[in-house]
Length: 517
Image (cartoon, rainbow, N blue to C red; front, side, top):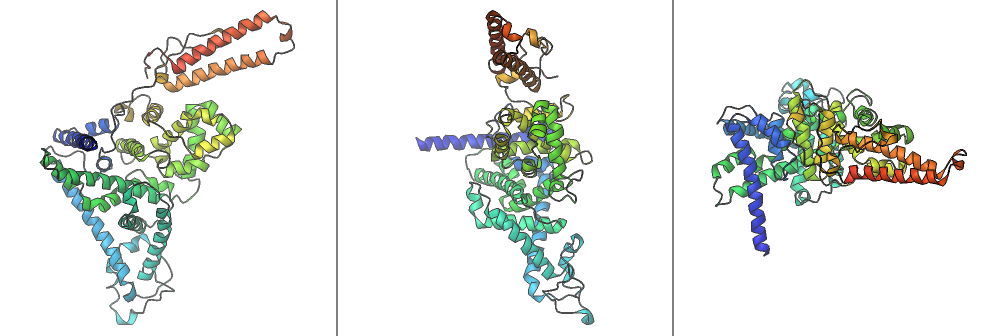
């Protein structure tokens, strides 16, 4: 029985993979890859398998592989780009390793103490031959290394590796891949080369971004390689074509390219949240945290905004730095994060090179959605709220959060909302407002169809007015004491009836669909 279940599972996996590959292939052949890619990546109504070749999607969305290719030439152009990625990585990494091995024989003029600058890193490959003049040759002093010297390079590399290694040792992802010493060495090489190339210090969190990208690249390439060895698979040419675009021996190169672009100005610009020169600069992580809790949350829910910022006085940086810098890798599962990164990179693709700001992106809007999503937990008290923020609860389906975020980010569907297909909505998101009662008639819009956020805000306001009336019943004023018991009973009965109506809206709507303007 287990054997047949295994075969059935394998067949399902192969079917999912082949569907994804055929979709990309046929869309490229027909010259409509951009439209098809965005609609598929942002389709949260269908089942979203983890084995959806996220790494290939991201390379397309970040421009590492061209989207607008001549029909019928996509495999050829993508293969050329992949070979260039691998060649550039090998040259850069091999050069670094050779320079480190040559440290013992380094001879250079001693200029002044310093580390490696951005320009000097590119000149390391030729520095050993620049000291042919006998009068200027001196033995390198390791205690006072010259600018750009091999000893300075060694010190810089050792510093990055020592710090990153500590973080990688604490990376407890339950995947056999990360137990291998070769994987950790590969991640260290990727981080070191990135820091040297861009003259950046290593910052905590970069290791998780790199590890996540490495895992998806390795998973996609390994799956393709495994399927290519299946003799009964009919579409062998298609599989072989994608194997050349996602080769298993190119995982390090593809990971470096994706990591560099996610961090860099041509991609998500995540470097702004790791290497900002000033704490409260316009593009810093602190500014993003404060804007999320103080401005974006107010757009979702003024009541929760007041509770978080005025009543609790919680600093957004206390939890949002982790959320934002790691792009939610600790708040959601790996498959869910892959879906969220599809969303982030799709927005970046649509924005173009000049109009994208990470602090004003769907990445920060998602954080505000997450706060609104757990409003009930956040309203019970400051200590409980902080506990919830530090340990966000598991979310069964991130599609609901994505829908809330896109509705707030692009309500007119002029941008990313145009390509987005929402998940099947929970009853709560189909609810219409109940008929108005006497005290809440000003709030009711019985003929209007409301968005999920409007429904929740409105019903919350109705509940607040009902609670206020109940408090008057239990804590009557001196004038009210003279009223007869009949009036109190009538008010109590009417209040219970209103509570039932609000309950029905929030939990048991009659299936009426919500329309979003």
